[in-house]
Length: 389
Image (cartoon, rainbow, N blue to C red; front, side):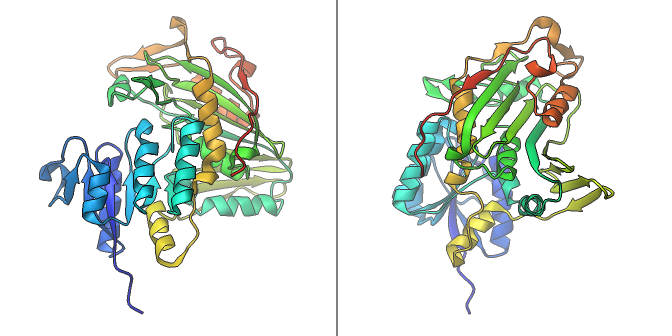
């Protein structure tokens, strides 16, 4: 059998996180699986910036797809542009890896997902943690009853981000920009993987798996969006999924998701593909897993029909969380005595928040229920009718 020809790929957004995609495409190119044929950027890259000879460049995504004959595209652009760019690719029959969050609102997500489905193009959403082989392994442990009956799933993300982080792009730290939704909050963008991974382990990834959502959104930084927040999703299956996140941590922590069972727990540090299984009658077991790259999985799907790991519908429940954050009251500024500046580090810290984030994941509780003096009671989002697709 002759090996498949490398798939011509266009990358939209090659700066910031897009640099990671450039390196990944170089890796896949070396393996003859892909060929980077075009870069879409508003300001063209220089050869020095790119680190070598540049492929075709244009600020017009559609024109670039047409002129290069691309068969697949990676979209790593500001959140409000995801849906129009995805639809531009779909119209041309170009398959997609679309960065997370897939859209800034549930309506935009549906428009994208329906358009992609109608065009019959493959679309993978860039939740890299869902490519971890730990995810199916943990699901198997749950199904075997390794930790008894699951009582809920917690998620914790305590990250350090300086004030410059919120100035890195015009849309950073914004809920809206020029009248368009952005929804760049801690739960919906930087720590979105904690939410999506927790929902995946709960077996509740589709929009119709969500029965209700409570949010507590706050901010220490001088931004529009939340930087210290928590969400509790009530699933149709019954168990709560509670995720707490902050970008104002005292110390940078490794984010994780924890499955609580009646006779044990499974902790998954999703960036490290590392799992700790603790159960009654056994010593703790640490397990390490590999992961499948999501672009590589998309290319395999195009070659031989390998199943996609993260389809748009697999992110419907996550998008219900994005919608709950979008429609919640604007995040409340924390009182001045609830945060402080770190000398010489240009960042704001909420003292005690690291322990609070961990407690929320451990007890499946919201900040207000844990007695945080600055937390305001949860905003409830009753379930809306959702398209069953």
